[in-house]
Picture (cartoon, rainbow, N blue to C red):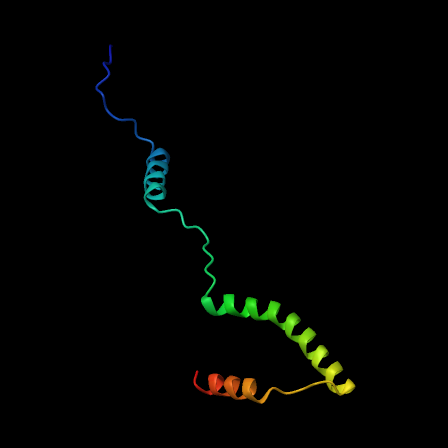
Length: 87
């Protein structure tokens, strides 16, 4: 008895499941982590570097006050107050 190849696809349920999984995994986009830094966070990081400079300036002012050499410029003070409250 001779059996001819009839071109029937091989029936393998495991292989069919593997092919379905591969197709669905190929369609799903690859998700990656993303980091966004807000403008507020950037400003906060700038403020931290500013804090060191500010502390140095405060120490200088304290030393001037203790020595009695600190002088207030009334015109500059007035301009700074107006600028501050006009913000």
